[in-house]
Image 1 (cartoon, rainbow, N blue to C red):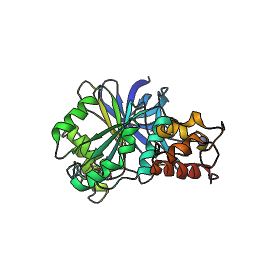
Image 2 (cartoon, rainbow, N blue to C red):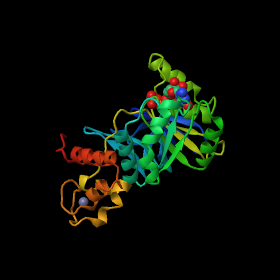
Image 3 (cartoon, helix red, strand yellow):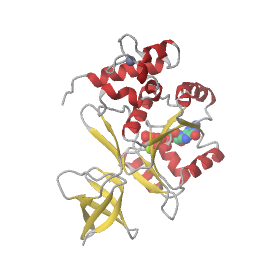
Image 4 (cartoon, rainbow, N blue to C red):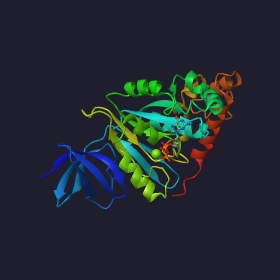
Amino acid sequence: MNRLGLVISGHGRHVLVESDSGERIICHPRGKKNLALVGDRVEWLASNDEGTIEKILPRKNEFYRQDEMRTKSFAANIDQLLILIAAEPEFSEVQLSKALIAAHAAQINALIVLNKSDLVAPFQAAWGRLEPYRVMNYDVRALSIKEDPETFKSLLTSLGGKITLLLGPSGVGKSTFINTAIPHTNLWTQEISQALNSGKHTTTSTTLYWVDSDKHTALIDSPGFQSFGIHQIDPHHLGHYMPDIKAHLSGCKFYNCTHLHEPQCAVQTAVHDGLITSSRYRIYQQLFEELSQPKNY
Ligand SMILES: Nc1nc2c(ncn2[C@@H]2O[C@H](COP(=O)(O)OP(=O)(O)OP(=O)(O)O)[C@@H](O)[C@H]2O)c(=O)[nH]1
Ligand SMILES: [Mg+2]
Ligand SMILES: [Zn+2]
């Protein structure tokens, strides 16, 4: 008989499912592809010690990146995205913008958190580069997971009752965030990943961790990425997912304005007037170009 469960982690073709009674079972896909994602509610069927995924229940959302060659899904049914960046390594504004655009397109609320505020000089530089994002009304926070437990605690409290996907480049502190929020629980994961990665802490699979025993609050750890593809976005819709650009779209003369070279373009006027920063406009131009390339697949 099929039982209900929640996908807790993904490991290539198989996934770890937490059953409705709290036990954890390795499950294999029924079909050829493993389509179940962390955060998926599934129907599964026990066979010996393991199980098979019989059905994936309808998703409220799915967060993924679409690189040139493939789609990489992070998780399903998340309540929000926490984009973690750090004073070091220096963050890429392009990658940050892409993650925010993907979140908008998936209609998932995103929060930007800058970690390692204890590294004073690089932190100040990084915080300054986030100014346009504060002006756009993104929720931008600063913290030091290691040196400022009070700020960390209040951020964690604000995540209560939600399933939050931690996303960001390698080395920013996603796993440290989760280890600090939930001491002891995932030490074994680190040991396994250290053994597999010859001593490195780098996370290699996506895993959901419950913060509270009532299982109302969860954090999802994900592997850091180098680049974040958004090939799912039509370049002509790009401006709608960039709040600073979007604010001016209705003022353009041509309904199909690309905001690159048309006359009487309100976006270009706003760049000229300093209402859109030149770095954000450059990102718009770069992404428009990238998304307009003929696809290689
Ligand atoms: N100075 C400082 N270092 C920190 C802080 N938080 C985490 N780190 C360090 O940053 C390094 C990377 O942390 P991880 O938690 O492994 O980073 P990650 O984002 O999980 O990286 P990947 O798994 O590779 O994606 C570790 O050496 C941490 O000790 C902080 O607040 N300040
Ligand atoms: Mg990690
Ligand atoms: Zn325009």
